[in-house]
Length: 208
Ligand code: MN
Image (tube, rainbow, N blue to C red; front, side):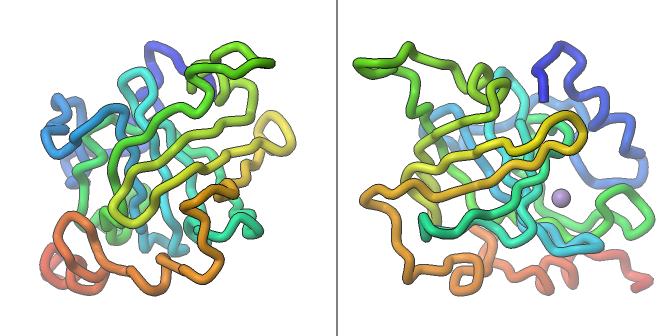
């Protein structure tokens, strides 16, 4: 998960931009964002349904695939598998990736907003740490200001190398709520108000 100049190389290698409607290298239009940096969570009905959790770091979106999606309950630890960096413009992408392309399936913008680094100021016994430094160290804490999710979230790495797995955990703050379950009770797009099957019906290939 190191952040490098060619960090979008893997993203581009995996995709055929003549076939997928996903963004390439165009400049990101983030006029919707009241603040930066941004985050986005995309519900992705690929071979397995999952939620792609992405945060803006140094001009790209660092990304994790969360099979069960985020929780608002601090006692729930959600597996988060690192995936390739995505371009910022991906935060605007909702549509259908053709079945035979990488990540084939329907993508919805399930939540998005801004976030802030909970370690940017440091405290009496720690130095400020950038988000990039925290990702390198495998322990990140951020405050989300989304339409569905708000409050502190921790991403914690377990294991190393290619076997690295992360956990996405709601921090125990005033926004924690063990009774909410937004993944099931708020299933629609914050971008278009559509459900997955509506996106699929409106933007899918006609021959399906
Ligand atoms: Mn995905």
